Length: 459
Image (cartoon, rainbow, N blue to C red):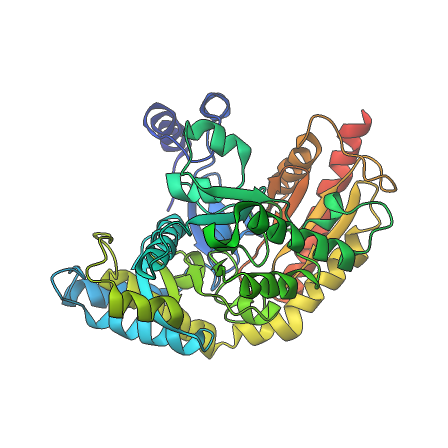
């Protein structure tokens, strides 16, 4: 799309006048003006001024097959011509949603055989919360309704999703969160580990904070624990290897359901179809969205384990919950085409065996020695760079987030889209990235770190 400078300016004016952006300081944005992204091709996006930007965030954790894949446009067009919409109410269904549910069950852990569709990860986490509490009520234990989550977790922006999440600024704006949700420490060793405490010991301590919360409330009151395999929006916080096995042991011991939020990690991000396999987790529910369609259409899928599903079917009667667009035929058709591409091009194998290990190696070799870098870490194509003032003490710059924002801004100006979360630079690129793309990203991020160091040093 060719946009003249006059049209670009007009679009910025209209955006400022009428468009409320998510997670945005609107006064600040309207003073600066928004960047207008007009097209994408492969791993790159292009703005209205002709700048090419290597997208290290896959849009918002979702465009796993990259931009400009006409197969998905063709799948959407074919479905629109045949049946643009019908609902899943009134004992009805459509072929695309049936086929997609069956496909997801084939890919999911063995104990999962049911799927509930929505339009976003937030919606599906709402559904998971409703379903888990409803399950215990059907089992004659309605008082077993407390859900344990983690500090700085992100589970969406709806009232229920934000309540499940552990981000205090979001809670403050809620003006009253959903009750009976408890938050414990996150498995974030870089900031949470004590001096001389090993990652293994810290991982066990973080897991046992869940046990302490269960015992404090009473096991007969706790319905479930919810967690992301890797905490994405919180800063790509990768748990120590000791964490998830201990979490599972605790949940089984106290008969607490395990809700896994894979909105970010599902469909190849960690080098497996689900991060549940990467970390050896057997969950009762898995929330997915984003890469299910590679962001080409809004769609989410809550995968439901046999324990919950059998009770819902046999004892539940009508489940008073659903969405107008549950199982939308166009979205499901696009998802099927997207999964076909991921499978046919062996993108997950590439991430697991080639680009994932290469990204980890290059983050460490190219960036870990930089004066601003306290740590690099990654799993699959999901990485983080911790920004510090002092490497030895891990002391941060003040105010919080100031330094990482400078790095991010220099990276974007240098043609690399990354995200700053607190004092962490995070990335989650399309699965189509190659070693050459990773090299380009490391060069551009290295330049951004150098420029930010000059800024922070007062040069």
